Image (cartoon, rainbow, N blue to C red):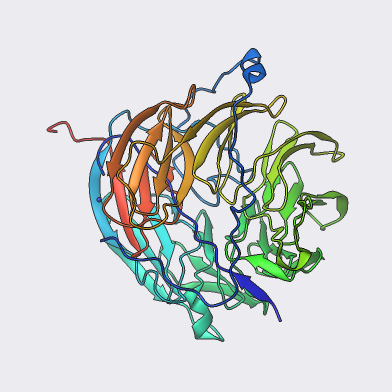
Length: 440
């Protein structure tokens, strides 16, 4: 019988203006302290010998899937230097006992889409927060809706994975069902979309390649089944005809996108001295990132590694562990550890340029403070804490730029689209920040 690890994962943030604090829901299952191995990161002076550069900011009108784009490497996103709270809007049922929001919303064509812990999918006007439509999905096992699944959107098609194992395709404009397929296994990761293909990973280390227009199953692939798994799962990365698949077993597979043909794989997990295999979590909960012919991946049972996409050659491995998304841009990789440290790692050699402890200078937390992020937007790294503190950090040296209390618990990274920043709180409320009006 599978043991379920309940990870308490968090979110990301901003620099200008932001906005009850609930206790974390208690989830059933065995728990393991995933940060017990962490010993703290240390900057390496040799890392400063390498050039540091970030790409120019780019306007991204959409955030259509995990990490905005299928490769998970959106670069440096555009966001005004000052943003203010524009609206707060409800998006259904939030977290509670046994109920978790697992993935952030998506944005496309002026609409913001989210799924709640009661299998309801809601579309809002991204500019105003006005509800456009809401549809409650019919699951075979409704109780599994408590683990919310995730979303991807392109054009007028919205794809939804569910904790009950069904994948739905809806009209993005109306919420009307186009097709659905039952994969009969819990789906916790958001789907990835590239062209007319949809890629879905399951709780038991499988990936399904689907026709995005019809839902027809094209191919499947399986990794090793793991006795322990993370509550949150990572979406596959897709680029240039290949898909990088992260499994709960700690395996990273590179497959051909069209037919699932094997290219290469590696195991990211590394045994720790004295560790018990029965209670060691090896999952890859951080989405792999494909950029410039290299795939970057990090597992809970190992470090951050860089591989050649075509042949799997490992260029370096850094002793950095996280369940949070890593952000690759320019010459750096920005990593937020589960111990609350934000670090900049050289893409060239894996050396750590700087490390900052995010909790320093903030009011003492009532309970343990967890962090989520980062997102690189508007020339700053945005992270957020479980007790609602949004913090912006300079990517050049890790210096804190601002910190603001959102006044709501947040457990998922923010998203940025069309010059606006969005948070989804644990109460399933969207908090949107936009450029101030000319009168402000």
